[in-house]
Image (spheres, rainbow, N blue to C red):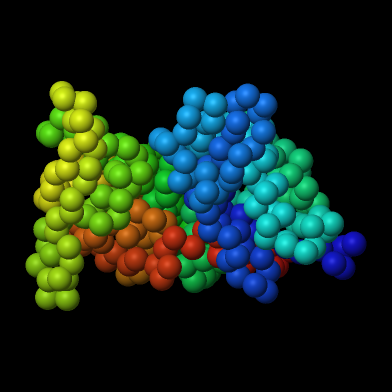
Length: 334
C-alpha cells in the first residue's frame, strides 16, 4: 500500500482550499464552505456549490465556513470538508491512504495544531506533516529557504495575514494578524451601509474587492492601467425603504473603505522588520519583500507598501497558489 500511496499538499484556508497532488500540481481550488441540511444534519453541498448558497438558503439549510481566522472553528464540518477534497483529489485511488502535508498559520497554538492533525487523520490520511503557511508560501514562490539569506514573506490570505523572515530553513521572526481578505470584505460592506444606507451581502463585497480593491491612486496613473475599471454598479437592499436599489461605487470609495485594514497590515510588517536581526535586515533590503496570497492582488498594494517601507516589494507569480505549491513541494520530498 505504501508503494501506491499518493502525497497531497493542502492549503486549508479560511476562504478557499487548494489541494496539490504530487506529479499533477494543483487539482482542486474551491471555497471552504459546506452547506448542511439542519433537519437531518446531512451535507447538502461542498465547495463552490455551497458558496453559491451563502446568503440565499432557506431556514432548513445553513451554508457555513468551518474555518475562522485560519483555524478550525467547527471540527466535524472541517473533517467532512477535508475528507471530500482528499477523496476528490485522489479520484479513482480512493482506497489509498495518502501522506498529507497541511498548512497552518504561524501563530496557532498546540491545541489548534492538534485539531488540524486529527482532522486530516480522521479524514483518511496515512501520515500527516504540518507546515507553517509563510514557509510554504516562500517555497511556493521559488525562494531558497535553506540558504543563509534572509527573505521576508507576507502571505495575505482570507482569514489571516502571515508575516515571516526566513533563513536557513527556519522562521526567525514572525507575526500572524487576524486581518486579511475577509476583513476587507466586511469593511466594504460596512462602508456601503454607512454611506448609502444600502445593505449588501458578503458575496457582493467580495466582487467589489476583486473589481475595484486598490491601495493607492498611483496604480491608476500608470499608462498600462488606464483602461482598468474605476466604477461598478451594485445592487442591495435599501435599509430605509426595504426595497432593492442599485448604486454606482468608485475605486476611491473602495480605497477609503479598506485603507485602515491595509495600514494595519503594513504596521505588522514594520513591527517584524523592527525585530529582525541586522544581518537579515541587510538581506531584506537587497532582496525586498515578497507578497503572496489573494490579498497580494489588491491593486497598487506593492506601490503603497514600497512607499511606506522604503523597500522593494515583489508580488509572487500566481500568489493565490503559493502556499499550496509549497506544501506540494514539501510533500514530494517526504
